[in-house]
Length: 497
Ligand SMILES: *[C@@H]1O[C@H](CO)[C@@H](O)[C@H](O)[C@H]1NC(C)=O
Image 1 (cartoon, protein in one colour):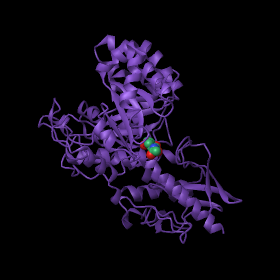
Image 2 (cartoon, protein in one colour):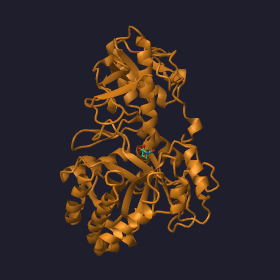
Image 3 (tube, rainbow, N blue to C red):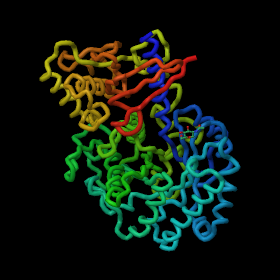
């Protein structure tokens, strides 16, 4: 009986993990004259694990093509719509009636963004009309019974921050304070996110040293310690997102969720541009996706991933500016991949739900790298130190991290050694650690009522507390959650027929 219960709980965990991938989104820029037809784009998305798409406008053809796909859709009200939306509640109601109501819920519209990078444009009149426009749109959505279902936000460039380094010192441009004091409460009251466009690519262009490149591409690097709070950053994406978090905190709005509306890396550029290449673009986007899927989070927001829209779905041949602007696409407009970042559904390992292997978390076919029996704590500690110095993210085993408990050298070693093995290739030689490590396909947990769960690399020990309750099983997971705050406890209820 116990093994059936455990297998069901594992099934539930595996399903939740599959769900968690849907926070990888993509931007559908349309400044091109060679885009595939909407149906082809919808089919392309369905063949991938991309769960969300952001449109810059509200193109009905693509919104309709995505009907019944489940793909989350962000639609945009253009900068030019802001004056009328701000001036007239009826204009906002009309906008919602034209661009949301006819398609929802078959087309899964989740958010309307009002304007793009308005606060850093020179046009002061648009700045003052932004919040009134958003408020009218929110009221119009409420009026259409879509409040709480379709959120309203606006997209910012990182230039809204005048200070972002170190991340703990992040703060908004003082000139924007008045607008932010209206905007942030509106977002908070409606559980809408603060939406921003961080680009480590541009950070690298302004500081093109090799160590900066590794930091920007999530590759092994020595990291940067935030002098304000001592936290170690191993990548620029986390540093930029945490700078936004600090700026929000400084204004008392640390609870407002952050959404990354755009980030990306171009695969080509002009000969005088530093940074664009297929290799770098693949490294940035591929490692970003791995980072998001790990749910490791950032030093200031551990244990959850920021909802992120990669820029962009396709190359856009008509975009002005340097060559790189036309080469951000994950895909070419003939639907072939620009480079493979593992988004194809067929390249995913499907979690096995077979009840015959109840205590082996199935997604990982190559098994775990774990310490051999009888290895001393000193040796395990030096394995942790080594693995964590190689650029893998050991945040989860630091205090407050998802996998900090149980706080033992053995458990932290299991996490970091396995993460090293998963990150640097599942080869025997990456699970050696001076002959103190071994590969296993068995549950490595020594704890009763505990299973080891492979969180994309690291091993978290999850304590399952189950009881049979008539026809359902209640599983309480301690010390670990798939989403949400690290100390939150999650109950999974599974009905048995
Ligand atoms: C709509 O999209 C959101 C975001 O991806 C997702 O969480 C939700 O499950 C989707 N809804 C449906 C009905 O598929």
